[in-house]
Image 1 (tube, rainbow, N blue to C red):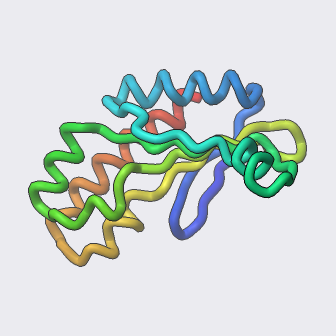
Image 2: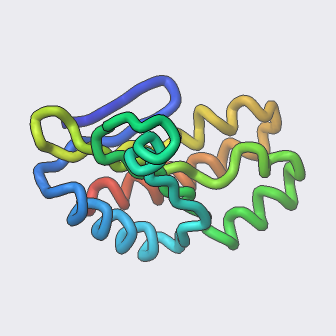
Length: 132
């Protein structure tokens, strides 16, 4: 099932949370993305709030050559980096993978040079999702 919001896009898959996380990492790497940051939301809520939460992982993905290109054109763009990829378990046991929509995010910049860049990043993220 496709997932679409004004700020993200993604899909649900039937594979387990751990398997999906592994596949997402592999497919991001194929598209030239490394993981700069990783936030295990479930663990943090347990540690900081003593609250239970579903499996929920935020991966801060970055393609270094694309980040260099973008920051060379728009120095303040770092406020919108890295590209967040979220993997979480749904109530029915399926797993969701959503990606920050780079077209929506970079439209906030107001620099028309960013549109082709945002589209290229979105294409890479869609290929990653298609491979799940």
